[in-house]
Image (cartoon, rainbow, N blue to C red; front, side, top):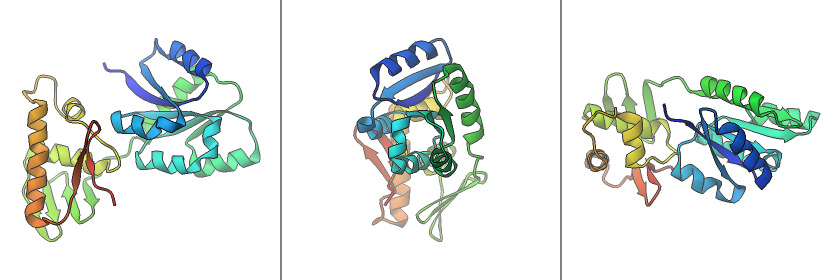
Length: 221
């Protein structure tokens, strides 16, 4: 089973090394970065959760950013106070006060990931697109666009996570079994076909973009 990938925002090298040493025997792989490179990390990887040091509290706007990516957030190593508690209630999924307990963090993170996984939406909306996953019906405004089962999988993934980017390789890994005769070129062809079908209805609207070295995502205004 592939390891979960967790994003760690931490400036202290010693803390990063200690965390990596602890988690290396678990079902988790840590991707450590500093605040400066958060956006780059998010565009290149699909994470399960965010672990951030107390300095993260200075940047509540980043909380919203992670909510857009539908990622739970743990902030650790903070001093307990009423102000911090109020911040926790408004912004953060979990805070760990004082000295870091990695075992406790591991357990809490797994539970958060489990609880945070959104219930599957049968009907997805993006701009004037409406995708009914259960019936495979795609509406663009008041016009129906016919898509096949594989195109549905691609569009379902992109519309369910409009702020996240997915490479063709990642789509192959997430959507199709290892035994399926699906190639990266085939997936790229599926996306191209979806774009062409949407363009027939709305040639002036751009719904999907392919960001170089980052992957496909919905065009969020």
